[in-house]
Length: 164
Image 1 (cartoon, rainbow, N blue to C red):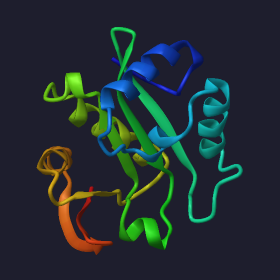
Image 2 (image 1 turned 180 degrees about the vertical axis):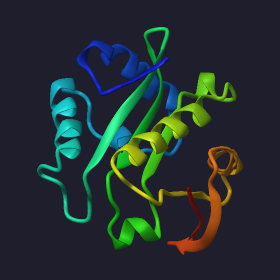
Image 3 (image 1 turned 90 degrees about the vertical axis):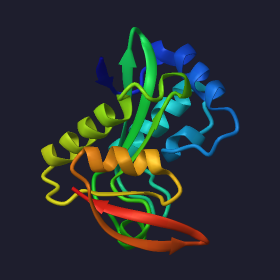
Image 4 (image 1 turned 45 degrees about the vertical axis):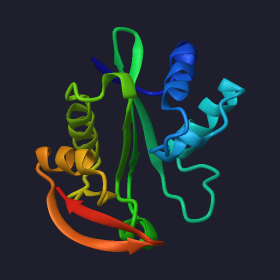
């Protein structure tokens, strides 16, 4: 398994990933970017990593794909820093595991790799948030040394906040 930056060579795998997600809510947020022109999609993801042309309220973030057997099996988006709103609800890391490979420990692997990336940037305290109803996500965070910090109400959704 390897963690890579998004690449044109995985366009078909990315399309399969999105199709497999179906109508479920998508995390991290770059999964909602239009990818009909894949080169434009890649340019947008790269711009976020370089902190260029960020929409108001957004911060610099890097997107990586977890590759296994030449297929995308996980996606992470890592915010290099937080602003007040994202610290309240959002955190440093958003990730997704392809539905057909969930339960194989890939979430823990990807979360751990994401935390390591942030530590490499010099981030001392990593904030990771999840919906209270998402017990699998909270279990993954705890398995990566996440310590419960607090709960907040984010527009009718209770968010659990952890720190590592």
